[in-house]
Length: 387
Image 1 (tube, rainbow, N blue to C red):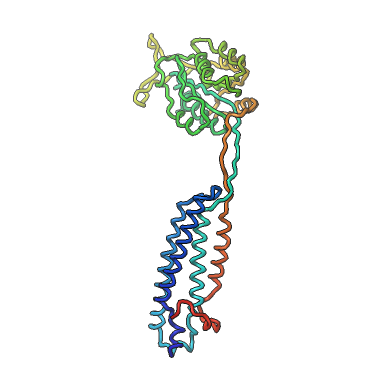
Image 2 (image 1 turned 120 degrees about the vertical axis):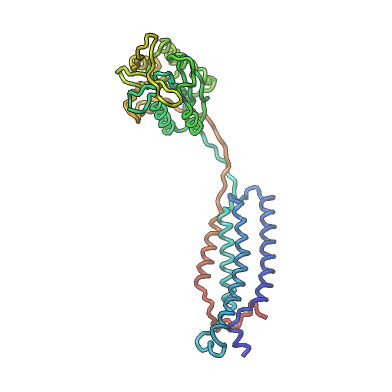
């Protein structure tokens, strides 16, 4: 009778004691191994060491397993008497139940270690960044507020959208931004960080410079002073303006830039038809700009001036015809400039070793799924967790 009861009872107390011993051994070995590898093996590391905290899940798995064994014992007792149930059910295999648990527990541990991605073998690589230095000169004079290209979009709005689109097309180049009207101001020094350039671009407005007018020559000079000519890098300037230059020194500045092998491309913002310049106060349009005789001031694109600047700078001229500026000519000209090495970076890489833990984990899970708890003849020869 005792032997019969044994077939329908999963031992609890011995299982708990055995688990405590196994867990102490497991965590001690893991801790000592981890400390040794981290301290003494330079080529070893975990890519995501914080994920190792997920090993705590194993403790909850242990608790669930013990509780589940206790629940099965109570369920069998409530279902029927031992004398009756043994005719329809051969009982549990304590051996198989224990093996299933150990397989599952070990597989979860291996999966956590694989998720932390142990890496071994340090390799040093050098990456070269090749490109050119590009200064973008953006006209922010009042005339750039005219809305003659696309309704409800000012010339400046379209210019900023176009610069943003250009930044998305660049690869490896360093970019800087100069804003100008009657004076020129360096908004952003040369940087390889296009995200930063996009942030600076969004903040640009016509109220940044109080001195009105359009001095493209001054903008070219400031762009030139932003370059480091001691470095053997090719350089270019992109000017986005309506071309209404009141100082008329731009062509001379472009010639001087070309003599130093700096390419200048220009983009015409506006149309040939004269349009009024809107005046805003606190974000609301309050009228149009007037002259001293109270007549409406009209502005139009000075295309000839921008073409001459581009020719003097050995570059190309492009006219903005809509909301999405066609950048192909500009990009083709910039891409034709020989790229030089702007930056060399050395970094270390490690060989991933997670597969040595992931594959065994799946194999153990498959075995755990195949093994059944149903008692067989072989189970009478094994005494795991039994008194």
